[in-house]
Image (cartoon, rainbow, N blue to C red; front, top):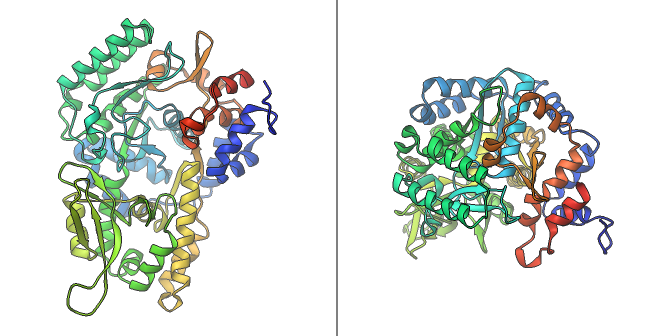
Length: 500
């Protein structure tokens, strides 16, 4: 079906709108347009694995071990490290939720396939961002069902709406009583006909076998429950093999790396934080960059503050001259959600203590700086991630080159390495698509449990063209870029009429 505008097809029109927010995606699509998804994965293997240019730093191994062992056990922790040691290509596209979201699920399956092109592994480590709150679009509050009778996804809450501002990193675990209310909500959807009996039974099975698992219920916080739940959930994605997706919280690992680097006087982090000229340049150069901070209305400078209710609040770098020394110092300051003024000294002891007590949480800049920019791993994620990580590197480099007198041999080597940083793309394609009474929907975890794949079926599915999979990805990209009031009516139906 052709649209009545300057674009010949609706898919081209909608994709062009997405490109306005993610110009890197246009470059990716133009480059790999003629490949299949499987050929694209082989390209990633050849470019980012076979050349052996990336390594897993020992301190990342130590941070993962310290963080994960008590949650997933020694054997699973060592298995994750072994995979990342062999393939230091860290998947960092996911938000830390029980993974029902179609785009992240399907990208995780591609990452699983990429790893198994390189080594034989049934352990798939995935690094996920936990500094989101319960209102996040990936719906950490509960379960997403795509195969509905309503032509749109249905969200089944586990956590109440009043918890929407609580950060996943600090959310308390859900309880058996909360699951009982979830089942009651699910029952109502079955009764009113918004889901069919197969999907109802599958979702109920997930609640009983995953959410109600005794080990999951025994966790101390929701973030830990998510890890165990995803491990169980992923074991039923395939009919002929047992694979486990292990989610590791990015910020928990990054916090340990930051503390490690703060204790090293020669670390790049220390040279950046304690050099007033460099830090002021960095604050200016990255102001307004996605994933960093915006002095006017968004983001946070280096770290998020966490209040006593587990809610995050933004911090900005402020000049403070109240010490009486006559010296202006940069501190972290902001208002929590109750309006209280919060301040943190920007010094080594304060930062380490606040990270250990979890009153501070690394922002995306600090997380990616310590995990992938200053170290020798390669971060693979979504199209937006590649855009802002590149801008982070550019801002860091400019902050030093604007202050040449502080560049020594170590800093020069670090800055040169920034030019070689690449951030490949894996999260955005959709290729597992079902239909319900003529309405097409992408597969999330509920749909995978209801209709899991065997290897030969999956081999066939990933022969879809990269171009087609990206257009199907508009299911998630388009509403991400266009607010509801500006979206065309029947935009998904328009896409499906062109592609099916």
